[in-house]
Amino acid sequence: GKLVNSHTQNHHNTKSYFQAFEIVTCREISDYDGGTIIQEIKTAEEFLNADERAIDQPFYRVFGVYKPEYYKTRKALGDFYNVTDASVFIEEITGVPVHIYSY
Image 1 (cartoon, rainbow, N blue to C red):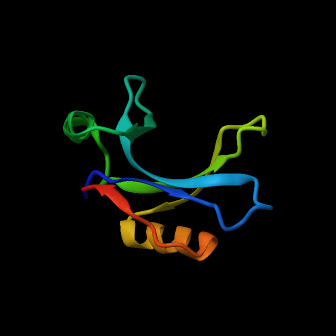
Image 2: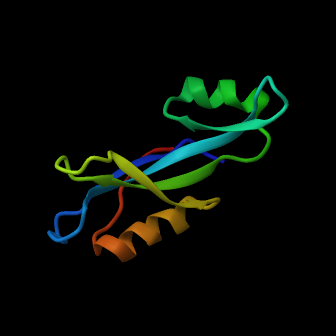
């Protein structure tokens, strides 16, 4: 798996509650109580540190980012093990190409 971050504006759909969509790299990590937590990974350092405690391969969570006037900030819309599938999902919603900022 790779470290991926992406932010796609949703300009073409003015009636949508979402101003943008993000792809965030996530890892399932063992916690100290014997369970697991999902950790969002933003930097290469976090990615390497998570490798030691991660249960599985990285996955990519698609978030819808709400417009500022809404009381929520964002909502998880789907999890994908393939970043291309996550990109296509956003393109199907927005109708615009998705640019991946880091690998």
